Length: 258
Length: 280
Image 1: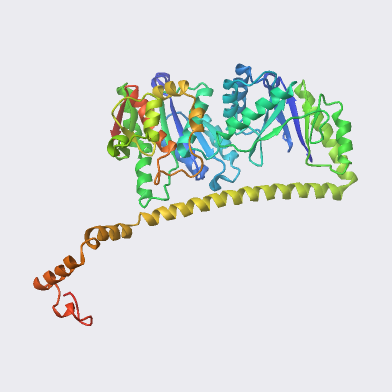
Image 2: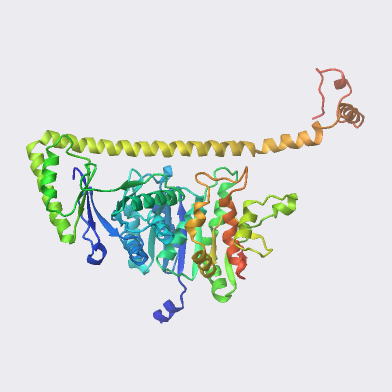
């Protein structure tokens, strides 16, 4: 019975990008929330002041314990601060491809804080709802039962990207439009998951990044503390692209109220 | 160990490395990066041994290829890759200086694109003092003894080729023994070298911390600036400016008369400042 259950179970990989440290807390968080075996890709920005302490033992201990517990794995990477969480997620995608792993589902997450926003706490809490037990069950149900579901996100994290050239009657292409053109994103649906925290079917993402090397994309992302308050950035354009890569391949973006 | 010793082996993965517990001793895996299958298996080997620092040594005989360079960039994110002062360490070998130079240039370029602006690249050679290369362990013992009694007994980088990993274990024991003899012979000097190395490490750590703190301070300034510029009082001020301040003076004055006529302002307050303007 147990074997049949394991066979039916889909494989899940969590991509988690860490800038603000507190690794023991995050490892405990994922162990508590994920009830079935999973691979935890954990990217650490090493030049962040919050990650100056040598803590590799924590990962070794947690990895061993998780493997013993249910076969879950922890795969750590050390990165520079380039492209913020998007850059980190590309490093983890690169890792996943080189290790030859092909999970069924992916969960994209990072330790978002947005200290420049007045309502940063509420925004953070809203995004982290994708790891609430009830949300996990419903997201898995959606992905399992409907093969066309590509993304599952919280209702209030989905935004619509305005076509700036059309809105401003402008001829110069924005980074978003340049990327849409370069990577042949044709669909008019401009909805995307703001904050880039969502559940996804991994097939369309793996297919795309097999053709377009993640580190080639990361190369063009901005370094350091990238913000799009004053001008548009490649990093924020890729925040949108990560949703559109999936929807372009005829998979749907579904939302759940959390 | 007082010096950094790198043991280079081309068949380390096949033989299985016995990782030395000794500080400052590192196994270096020698790979021809053009052999992408070997490079990928080295990547997976580094991944599986995440908590054991190793060095990637590249045997460069042909011109650089794009796939190999891409995969080398991926190595840089591996926790097992040795970092010195935060800089990923690569070790380059080859018969043609021009080929090595091309690889080095392109490696620096591709890694700068990934945010690694500084690398620690060693190009060991037999006649170098700062990155001395030994073709086997037999000559190393005598050289190490001399070095310990020279004016610079510590903090050097030594590279040794080993064909069999048992050679590495044997060699480490020999070098440890030499250091023990040196410690017994000159205990004050030995302790001073150890202290100097520890202090140097602390200094480098502190410098890295200061750099990171300065970056964070700049980030926080930027956040504060943004928070202030988006503050709700600023929104109110802008609303007031747009709705009221732009009106002509005669219109504003007429407005005050309307207020008096509708009983919202006292008549006397129109020409005297010392009376109450508005009803509570």
